[in-house]
Length: 272
Image (cartoon, rainbow, N blue to C red; front, side, top):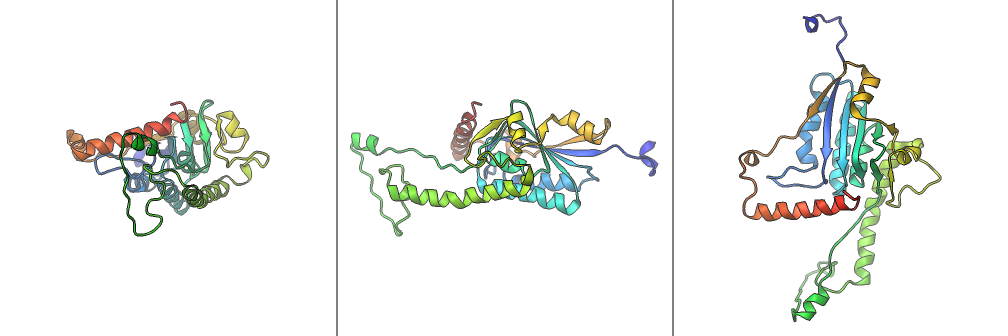
């Protein structure tokens, strides 16, 4: 009956968006943390009902810089348009692109053991020229354009390739730094180099201004918005075929396996 009486105050309503896993493009069968996959969920969180705030629960070792930027920009655009505060709660990790996402929030809350930071850019690959030579395998490459074989893993590494890769990484790193500075502002420490891809844990991140405090989702939202605050989880919908177990066949099995290997490598950097 209470909900039909307009002058009675309703409890605060906070949609909760879980951003868990590596950030990348994903595939039609395997949803990932990408702007295309998350757009409907984020739009619903800011548009359905009248949210008092939006909470992000983040557990990500990073991934694509572009997808991190697109997701964070979408969150900020909607938050600014609708005047809705955003809170990020870090679980195990918000590193690299994961921290890029966290900075989309107005406040960042961590656990005492959360890993935060890694504000940098990485390129990783393998080299096989010695193995190929040992087995008598000859690599033949013909290109139109001198940069087409950049960082070819089957050829010896070239100093000019390394220089080129570092030049490509520089503007991405600068964009990441600009985003963190724009979002965290005066809260950031000026006595520590925060942008050398180092990581910090829990309270250490708070002391450097990378986070605002140690807090967990439910008690913090109750403290800010009242004991009766309504937290509504917002989940990604599974691709249609995957609901019937049809999404991992043929080439998709190989793609999913490679994606899993790459994601495990990202998590392993943080001992997870």
